[in-house]
Amino acid sequence: MSERSTLTTKEIAFVQTQRVARLATADEDGNPTLIPVCYAFDDEYFYTPLDEKPKRVEGTQLRRVHNIQVRPEVSLLIDQYDDDWSRLGYILVHAYAELITPNHERHAPALILLRERYIQYRSMNLERSPVIMLTSQRIVSWGPVLHEIRNANSTFTQ
Image (tube, rainbow, N blue to C red; front, top):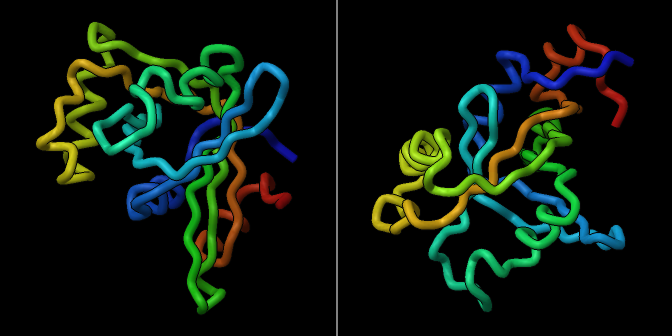
């Protein structure tokens, strides 16, 4: 099986059409946490904000933030379910996560992308909060919806 860290054209199209992903992190003891996230992708990095949706704690105190600080290896699952199983598919991105602060060169461009995808972010003050930036380390994809990709690549094991 060949390892790759970039998405194919078909995978990028799939990623851009999905609205939500699941971010998996783990704490220092390896205890996993899985949460749904909104995301944007710029053909190189994935971004998910610490936004103003109601939370029990301040954004920088979230479990995902703590987990990334102690263990930056994460996974991002972008999937599509349909009762017509010919439309099933997923892309699993094993990535390195980092919190980028408002003074980081990629922070402002990430916010532009996020606001283009999610109208709700247009009224939120995201400029003062960190954004989680994911750098892909390994890609796995599967599904009839990605059939052409499966035939072209040998990374489909799941």
